[in-house]
Image (spheres, each protein chain N blue to C red):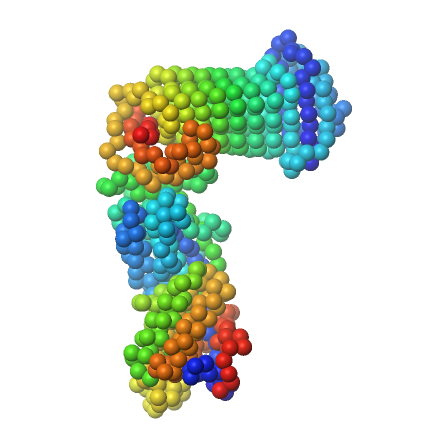
Length: 273
Length: 309
């Protein structure tokens, strides 16, 4: 199957929108056709070849592979609505990375801007560096955040990580900013480092696992009297697959705090001890 | 019986067991310790000897070590068989709801991945009265239902697979003690194998049946041809004067090969006891081959073992 390599020629003056540039969309095109794909640059619409050098070849992935090389900090919506195939970015990316993706795999080897993985419904997004605010949350004005798939952030996350998240698994190997999992509807979040203030503000359901530092628990959460050894083992064994700070979770006992009572919530903050 | 084989003095009839297609699932029941997992498994597979009146046939397949279960606790694997997927789904819900959900510390998981999904915790979750919570882990949905000892965790669905029910083996012995010893030995050998259960009490049934009855309301009745008490009275007895007790083992398995393997293990255990132990003959129950598509010929199961008698 096809492997398309797009190498950034030089940093664009304005932000470039990469929606539509997915492995599935490019798989059927020849190199000259790919070069003519239209991209939005500020208020202009320009050919892809204005920004990238294109090379095509055969790749191992059956669903197509798209490789980006260079600094893509000013390129937004990489992997937007991706449903299959594999995207690898060898550097930093702009905002909305992996947003609305429903399948396939996106691997960003640098950092990502704001709103990464927002409203993601499936697939796997891995970001080796840090991620900006509102990752795994909702698009501005939308009611539901991430609702499926797996987000792995190997660096730190900004504020409002997983705001309004509904389903799926989101892991941060490092630290998370303030308002982690605010208004969380459901899903699983795991933090390897420490989290900022106002954890789980207004959360309804869902689980947040603190593999690193114990969190500051708000007074609107109550300690759970009952153990949940079965659910914990199922969860911990799944998280342990990701390694790093989560590798030892199955061997640890936990304390849980339930809330947020201010939102009539029954979510859980899980603190391994 | 014209070409019967004899092994260690035990006559192996030239006949076959006739078995039927069924639907089955496997459930993994775990608990704080094996005692409570066993309590739940025994209860959930109770009153499940025959589909004739129990709705399903079920049994404990084996006990599970902590490293074999999804939650790292000890458990039991149970197999449940029924004549249709719909009836099986009903039985699963009733039995798990009344016998596993109620049993302290238990959790229940699907033990088969491939097949049509039927509800496991999907409907039982409503016991939670709104406090239940769903958790999707690695693409599998579990339900967490708050109960007085913590929470009951159940996988949302289990898979139903095609199966084979009604494999059987008849042990004809000189007395009750010899028949029981042979049956117990055979059941023990079969229990070592995966994918099969022997649903009757202790794996053994004494009330083998034939199709039909003189009473129109009954679809099955006592197998008079194998009743020692009717020898000389019934027109078509299969017994000889030296047979004073007959017992049967019924085997349900996930595949034809599983049932065959269990029958073979049972025959071998019986022939090891031999005529010296009071076991005289081995036979099997069938309906002339017209009702069930699976035929387990005793001689074929034995292969070349034994000698012509």
